[in-house]
Length: 175
Image (tube, rainbow, N blue to C red; front, side, top):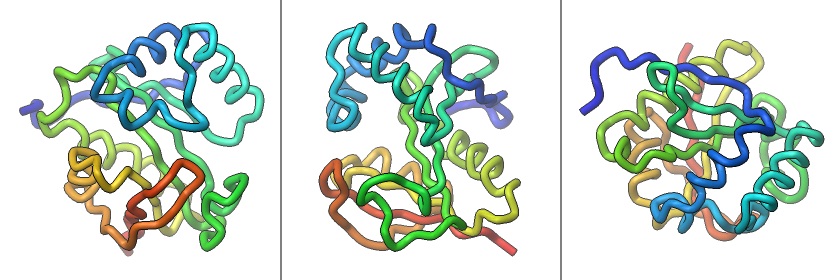
């Protein structure tokens, strides 16, 4: 179990983080869920190019998750109402989206995930326009689904996305 007050911070991703992201995405606990379209990069050069494009397009905000100052994971947030393609046709600009991974497998299954998710959500809810936050884990990714549930997300339905079947989960703003 992680301490009661882990120091969780977020730092914007930089191009120089590509080797770390590549390393994490090679880990079995990440690869089976993350290395799907459009994140299919298999080499460091491909991950670096993917990251360069993401930073240039600026369609979402990407951060490293820091625990006591050390990078342990990656997250991206976005406005679901502005998402490109067929991602969230039923969402408006009051909905934020969230994707994340804990890259260090030794830190999974220890209660840290829900703490990170709540910290991210608290940050997203600082924007008073944000009324709900969605996540879309693979329904077979039991660890991820459970993490979001522990953070207060409620499963709404399974649905098709450009990446395949996902479980739409939502956290609503508390008034």
